[in-house]
Length: 93
Image (cartoon, rainbow, N blue to C red):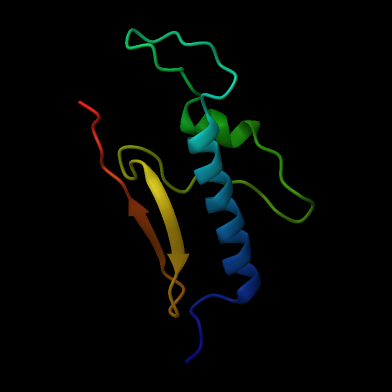
């Protein structure tokens, strides 16, 4: 069975998504806590994508952000080229 997208397109998409997940996970690193609840205030999704750098031949594009995806913990592509994202909804309250 042939994938829907060529391999190089899938790899570029995967690199962008990995960068997005990493940006979401590290958005508050090194930023002083300013929110009322003491949590670090990170960058907005579009600002985080703009602040990233990519290797030559790659680009960073914002594909999804909250509220579409909340707390992503894993992702993968299936044999049809579709992206699946696992989310972890947890409230420590």
